[in-house]
Amino acid sequence: MAARRISQLFSRSLSLSSSSSSSSSLGSLSLLRSLGGSVRGNSITRFSTSVAAEEAIIPPVEIAYTKHLINGHFVDAASGKTFPTYDPRTEEVIAHVAEGDAEDINRAVAAARKAFDEGPWPKMTAYERSRIMLRFADLVEKHNDEIAALETWNNGKPYEQAATSEVPMLARLFRYYAGWADKIHGLTVPADGKYHVQTLHEPIGVTGQIIPWNFPLLMFAWKVGPALACGNAIVIKTAEQTPLTALYAGKLLHEAGLPPGVLNIVSGYGPTAGAALASHMDVDKLAFTGSTRTGKIVLELAARSNLKPVTLELGGKSPFIVCEDADIDKAVELAHFALFFNQGQCCCAGSRTYVHERVYDEFVEKAKARAVNRSVGDPFKKGVEQGPQIDSEQFRKILKYIRSGIDSNATLECGGDRIGSKGYFIQPTVFSNVQDDMLIAQDEIFGPVQSILKFKEIDEVIKRANATRYGLAAGVFTKNIDTANTLTRALKAGTVWVNCFDVFDAAIPFGGYKMSGIGREKGVYSLNNYLQVKAVVTRLKNPAWL
Image (cartoon, rainbow, N blue to C red; front, side):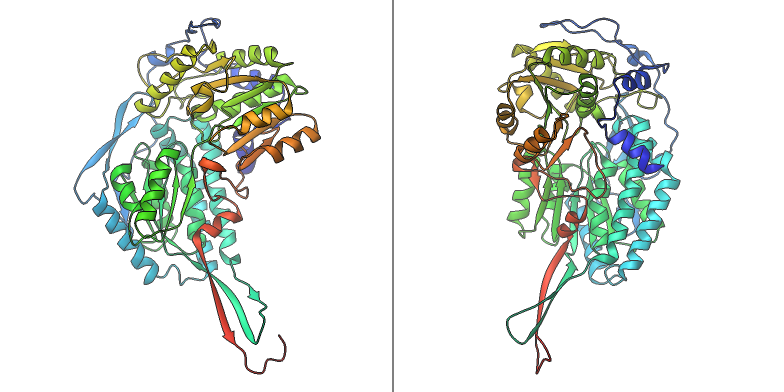
């Protein structure tokens, strides 16, 4: 059941019918709707402001964990400071969380170092480690609704998305890596001469991990899962916007039997806690997910300290290419999902929608209609597709890019403004007649803003799609296998989805080309990030064979 729910919510494939989107997302549910038709040019469509008038639904969960998790205990910050974490629906404080700084990172790293050097975790059999991870997955399923409610409350994503897709995927990822724990092994290597040569795959040690706010639970799983399977100890710094679910997950991991000090969680800000972790001399490996700008800083801090290896999953400006043979209704729905999923706050969002000139006008009209009918509102409300953006900074940034699109003479088909006066809600926005040199076609907006561009030839769209500093993902929509093969091999991106998008199976590697990152997460490839390879060479005396 969990796998089916995940595939339904996290991917949209060629089997989608054009009618399914209108019936399932717009049926008899009490959803927010647009009050008027869209207006072209520099006018802004006015959407319903009922979202601001409605009283926010009270989340059915208690916030129990707001302190750092260090050495198996929840503790206050060394400074005694706390910082507020907000409900993006209402802009109100929902909890005060321990504010970590360099001293807290030092304490967490010391606990992780002791757990790795002296504790039972790396000396456990791999099977014993896998059993703890499997027990954790069982506990995640047991507490599915509470975890999902915390994620929605702190992040603003639809509760249905969190409860039926992301929390089950958290459990699925840990089961996947639990399965790998006792299958990590080296090789016996033939050599020229009388030597026995073997390689050992050893845990790398104390790993530092910095996770983002857009998918707090999944990024926790992508990093913690493989690190634990390989036998490492961990210090994780959560995003200051969304600290709550990682702390809850950490409590469940210890309930599952994780020894103290193996997983330490510090909440805090990037310039203090994050920088201290990235530059720490006793951290052996670093993993970061976030913006390309911050990724450069993290990489520099790691290099200037102890030259620790770093994996980076960074920004994107992914092309979504709709070919002339496409079923337009299906293409519109998939392109809509590729961009608007998770409020557009997705690093691999299909944020450059390239449509063949022969079907461009029809596509634009239908894309506009789909966006106008997108349900925006309280993410705890059944049937809501889009909640608020994460915070005021992201909210203002998105509106600034929308203004840039208007000023650049792109055609505003719909949206373009906030919804209501409270909370960080933004109208689903569609621009047509977008040109490659516009900021909305170059920069990562990270919001519900679809830019639709026109192309004529396959060779042309390949060049234009690749003319970006990013290379995280791409989407291709076509019925022609030759066209699909041409595009998948030519596009410079770490993932290319054909007639689907946002398929995040546990076994599928994810990462980018160019300035979208270094290394891969998920799948067997991620294990390499958390292992050292040691060659052991022993001289043989009178060997029977070589």
